[in-house]
Image (cartoon, rainbow over all chains, first blue to last red; front, side, top):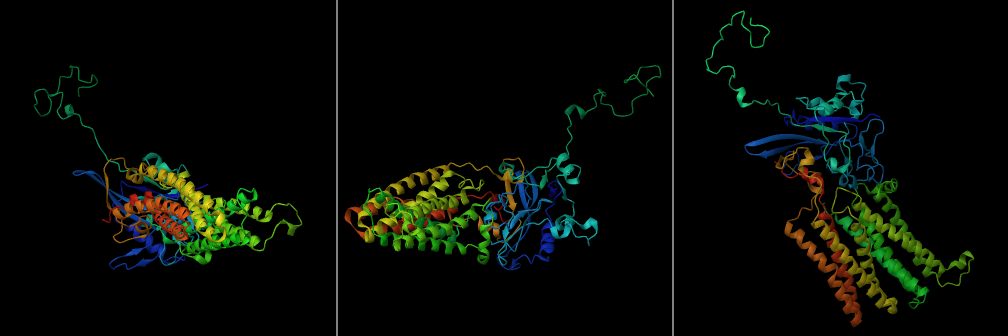
Length: 243
Length: 325
């Protein structure tokens, strides 16, 4: 069984919101209908989004790190939002693990949004149905698109390739290797939802320099310059070669 | 969580209706074993009608919570997994059984219509009432479990939630039955009144227990687990939106802290000591007005109690929406 998912690299995300806008653009133009946008340039804008980029500051000034954190449906392997749905409108596809909402069956009771700890389900204020990330299910299987473009809109839009897309059940897929080898983690593991989407942590490249490495131990007189060539008959430092 | 008025009305109205029916059936059961004098059929029929009105009122209120009420029939589909779906099935069942119970009393039917002779007074209504009582408790459990089954709403995820729904609804129903019995069954006023006081005090114990539990609760989720960064100091700088969204409206009660805190004391006073005092005064002074006031005050208190129940639940998604930016 495959489980499609996103892997988001927090080390690479620059917080440009390109995934947010391209997600909205693709999904508001689809056959499933528009995504509400009320007063987008007015005083109190509101609307439906499948994806958001948030920003967090880690630590205290001056030792701070800024983490840009894209958040969308994690397509949990054990999604708590699905069993609570009274109509069966909310379901997890067995073939690829995408969690979807059937907009024609949803009664808009909001119970699934209560049952999602991540807050990634939003009630559309005009269509009055629950909406969420579809992993661009209308795009990733579209045979009319070139194969390289059969990816979610957010993945296509990311300028820094912080978003990877693939099957996390295939151990050799790009996403599985990234999770395995770059310390991929899941959000709120305490609830046992087993999110399919994973995040890669911030990683810093560091070298350790010990104090005695700052001065040459074999230069006690601190005279810089080329060392005199030893005689050919003299033993060398490494006993291998003097030339 | 944001307390939706439709759900507050739904849970309080059906609670009162269920409690009233349980009171009626308790009275009838006691009279069969001759612990209490038997009452007229009209008393049970009218009482059932009042219970049905409360339950239908609750059902009607629930439709205002839905985005697509015309599709509400679909919500009976997932009874295998969803407590909400189970409630959708059990609620009409309870209404039907209580209506049948009242009708059987009104028409004075017994098992003779099926050709069975039992020599027990009101054997048919006893059977329908037993089924109705089972369904009523089933409905209490469904209603409570809708909230108690969501494990990350830790304030709700406790058996106390279900127990409170049962006791608070039953207490309210018995208080209503006390006032109602003044008209149709004066013999039962003291019986209902005493039970109303006992159940109200029992509900005080369990509701206080849940308040104490919730005051000491340690939330499992934090910003650390929410974004997966292990650091003791994480602050949100932007939630990714400047205006509001479903996430900022649905999961927070949106009132100042002083209001939130005062509602707790308001409901603690209105649901428990005031109705108990009014019931005692009404029973001792034979005052119908005081008994009805006890019900009205307790119901108003239960509206506040339900508001507080929703407002107190702290959804972990709020961790992601703390700073506009």
